Image (cartoon, rainbow, N blue to C red; front, side, top):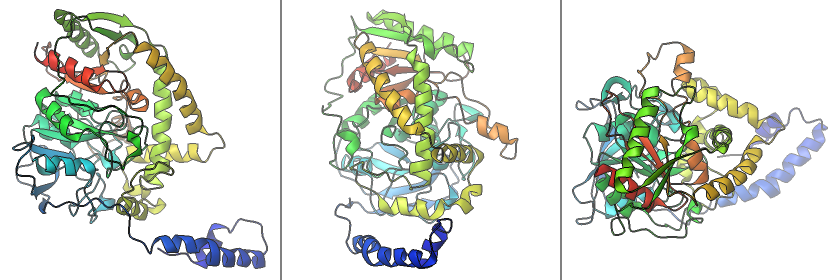
Length: 497
């Protein structure tokens, strides 16, 4: 770190001031204002989560990595007892594990090893989980397919040659391939539910604030979520009982005032409950007819459990897509690219070693080292950020109305249902293919997902059972804010059908 006179003059070269006045400004800055920044570096962080559990790791390549889904393998000591004893777990590689390499899908972070464990890591280890490694994350965790990571294509275990979905691509592939009992994914506009849908597993995005996001690469405090992915609901429930609850470090949790005991309060008696089948989740420009048809049939299966199923039109859904796309694009540029994931005024614990590592590498001269989908998002956010229009503020203001609209809708329904992804897993492209293919191949799969991040609602991709189609199809179940138990109850009841 350092402030120097030459850099100051470089930054203000276009400011129309006499040189002697610029010199005076520099003197005042150096003696009075910049001294504050120097002083803060003298002190150690007040809060630095540490871990009592020793760990070792093995780096790529791996002889048994059939789906190219592992970033690093770990052996970490854990509690000798607990609800997750004997469970093998992988975590997405934007979740910090102290002293273990972290890449977040980009070679620009090669050599970075976090200083502290994320809260979810501490909780898994305290519950006896065996964290066997870090799963590949798509590049800077922004892509919806599985070909943007600098470690190469992640294969779909159910469909070799096809995408596993993203950005929690490695997590889904390791779960679907049977390498782990469950994995953690992170979700800003669908990054848990997209790969869960395409790989035929359960993927749960809890309500905002149920699970602390402390120590995880961040895009936007309103969009950030972390949650479990598994082949069984029992593992989802086990994981959630360990992960849920405040940690005192994550302001995203301030909104969540309730507590949860998912296994204790599990109920698959759904008689008298009501599902709203969201019309706007079907028939999209890229929707596959087989997806729409299959999801409708599987939603209707809830009627066997005494659930009332009816179609509901929510015209505001399309506006919601626009709002979330705007927020996500601008936040990716402003917060992730420009500020290393560090926001202003959030009240969170800041993993400053991560943000500083990203700040050092995500510079203009390195933008060409990022994959096309990341560059397109970056440049879009850059243009919007430099406009005089406050696009993000306008989107946030629209979100206020959307929250009110959806709050009224959720008074009528226990669950909203629709396809998780409007189309099934796509073929993996050649990395030297057309630029358009490398960009559009990572887009469109989150059309039904991102709004529920901004609203903070719990949402799960559930693998459709009633299908003879050769590709996995995900049904999305959504509850109102804080209705995580309801979503879990519905998913478990469906699993038992």
